[in-house]
Structure formats: structure tokens, C-alpha cells
Image (tube, rainbow, N blue to C red; front, side, top):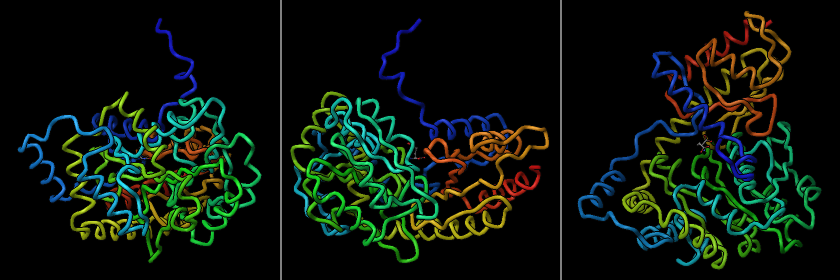
Length: 400
Ligand code: GLU
């Protein structure tokens, strides 16, 4: 029998990745499953970005890079921070990682001590609590409400803070709700933190460019510059440039913190992939006109999906400000039975039923710490969205 570490026994599998894999597997078996699970744009990576990687390969740029990233990419990130966020960072305040996820993971290992508390507003991206646990931290989940747009109220944050609080995680626009904080809302969160110099912010800005209806995302450092010396901004190219598989993320923050996170990287992955770094540099510093058409397509899908979901009895859906997810309430479907007589008691039951009997894969809200809700990704084609909505509507109407 394999002896497992206590550490790994505390960790759950990633529901987002598992459901995405399950949908792919069922499709490979010939089932006509529509995957609304994956948080991954369906667009191809723009050609000029691919070309940069091809050139790098041809030129033999295939060796280890500096641990913290190639200068070309780090300079592009610094310029991007100024261009998009009006923030000034030095090169030694930037670390290139193997995806945004690894930036959080290494950050947790580098900066958390046993029992340090990490405040995570729910619904949260599935991996924050587990990555905190891997690093022996203690996730403190603060439940936000649909009626508050799934945003943390300042008084909720205040009530959650203890002498052990080390981090507050802010993810705006949010995975899984798409909710994004206005400047005013973000300023109020920052004010709670002003008198607490030991509490740091982890600001996951991976969806910052994917916003709708003229919304402009401002991260907490933009809104409250006094937090700059205790905030780590996490970002990456996966979502904005449809580059999920290239695995390039980055962290920006105080030099000593970045240096510590780089040490974890030095002792684990060594560096992010050389050719992917070249591609990321082309993405960040190249022509940005490839981004808007993707956002426009997401906006059309969002509008369609919100309208379609709200027309289904038992489902209620907020309109998200950003990202490519909706997080509808399915409270009106709870306690009902499927035509086969199975009782639907929570979002996991509903997700199972939809997958098994209606060939629609989505992620139950419970994976994000909030029930009875489900997460639907609209990073798939409009045709598939339309078919999926018809299937969900039929499933909902069949419940008794
Ligand atoms: N972040 C995406 C999602 O939530 C990708 C999968 C993952 O790493 O969780 O679906």
C-alpha cells in the first residue's frame, strides 16, 4: 500500500479539471456531451503569438532560462503594468511562473507559516483553499451573497480578521461568479486593511481584461496605493490571449517576497518553459487588437446565456461584470425528483443528473464553496451554448 503524506490527504482533486477531463472522456466515447465546465477560452492562440514561439524554437531558444523569467518577458510585463494598470514595478519585483496557478502555489509555500489564516471569499476558485492547505495555512472562508453581487462587504472582511490573518485573497473579476469590484467597493475593502500592516493582499487579476459594458477593472493597488508594499498581484496570459496550455503566469510584488517565491521556483520547476516565455512576451507587448474580438464574442454569449437561464423556472442568474462564467442559483430545483426518481438535493446531484441524463457538463457550486449554485463557462461556441441551454431547460422542466 502506498503511504501518503498527511499533506496530500488534506487536498481535494480540482473539480474544474476533473469535470473538464470527464466531459472530454465521454466525448471520446462518442457521447455528445457539451462541456460548460472548462475555464478555458475556445479561441485559438493568435497567430503572431504562435509565430514568436516557432521562431524561438527555430533559433534554438530551448534551454533553461533565468529562474525569474527572460528579461524580454519581464520588461514586457513591467511595461504592461504601466500601460494597463498605471503601476510602476521594477524588474526585480516580477516573477514569471508556469501559469497563474503556480504563482499562487509557490507564493503560499514561500510566505505562509503553519496555521496562518488566509481569508478567501466564497464562492472562490476551487484551488485557493487547497493550495493554502498544501502550504499548511488555514483557509478562512467568508460567505458572500448573491444579493451583494457575490462581493465581500467591508464589515464581513473586518469580522473575519484575527491576529493570525496573513492574507486576504481578492479575485476580481471572479472565477466562478464573474463579479468585479467597483473602485468604490474596492476602496472600502482597502480601508479595512489600512490599519493592519501585517495583513497582505493576494490580488488574482487573471480576468482583468475580460470585462463588459465599459467596466474597467482596477486592482486593489491601483485603488489603494498604500497597499502596494503588501500586495502580490497575480496574472498571466492564459485567459486574455487564449493561451491556457502555454502555462505562463506572473507575480508582481515587493522585492523580498518575489525573491522568496523565486526560491521555491528554483527548487521546483527551475523556470517557465523557454519558448512559451517568448510567446508570452509577444502576446503582452505585441498588437493588442486580437483581444477585443474575443471579449466581444464572450459578451454576446454572456447576454444570451443570462437571458436563457433566467427564462428557466427554478433558475436565477446575475449578469457578471467580467470573466467568462455565470454562477446561477438553482435553489428552485432543489428537493425535486428526476423522471427516474432521483432526488436532487444539492448542486452536485444536479450536475450529475445533467451530465448523465442530458449530456451537459458543468461544475457544481459546492466545489466553489457555495450551494445551491452551478458554474457555467461560456468559453464555448454560441451553437454549443444554445444546445446546452435547451438541454438544461428540458432537464429543469422534467423535474417534479
Ligand atoms: N481556472 C480554470 C477553471 O477554473 C482552469 C482550470 C483550473 O485550473 O481550475 O476552470
